[in-house]
Length: 202
Length: 202
Image (cartoon, rainbow over the protein chains, first blue to last red):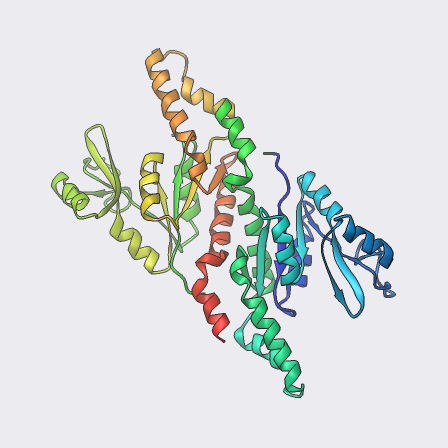
């Protein structure tokens, strides 16, 4: 069954563990490609080109946005971050599954371009943890808490636009569930139409 | 995450191996209940009540159909076979997943009652095998071949009404994929609305 790769987009509140889950998933899974973001930020000492980020100049970044070469992009602290479209498509065309770790707003942009993708929302291990993350140590000013509450509410309000929730009660369990989702999605009828047509023809 | 069990309906051409796959799946998987059919056929020496079939009288079978107690039913060689609704609902309510092995026509009837179920079509390991199964040893009369061709065409024409195809290239791989489908379906957003609402409330 040769088929196009599947795009898996992973979001969730910061600290829910999505980075750890995605990295654990791609280790020992050569068919899954973890998308690397492009950024205009300068590399930190330990960071490698093409591993942690693609480091590019702002002028090039702007040009790529203009040419439709970024699936989505955002600005943090004056630096641009984005997902290069070319590499994602190249991997999908080669039949490799692609994992994109991205915040909710970016994920929704990607969804408008790749409605056939699989959208996964990572939930932190407990309500308690979730509250702690928002409330901090109780020393933050109310406006910071307020901002976090708003962000969390906005993010969680988008869960129903995702296909799956991935409860991060343990990294191992979450990764196992993620693997199951990848395997199951590969069996979905709508992803095997060519194969089914072949069966019907014969 | 407490949730209702999920109904998995498994169909496929005869000899595709769906029975073997389903049995291998429920072994070592106590949360999955393999539905047992009811029949008016007399038990064979090795057959046990409630294990191979529920053996019931024709009058009772008719009454159950009338009362809506059968999810679907069919007649083979003058005997009735059907799926008792009560047991399926009882297991689903208890949060157990239920596997129903059933031919295409019956599966389509079940689908009209349980659209939220997961419908899986088992494909035999190869086109070659598929043709052999239809053509037999070349000694069958043309009308038998013709009948088999019609049945196969009708069955395969319904694949797109299923959610997943399960290629039986090896029993182990097919069972592993089935397990993945069960695990993945348990993570689907629409099956966790109560849990998500709980998260949103908090």
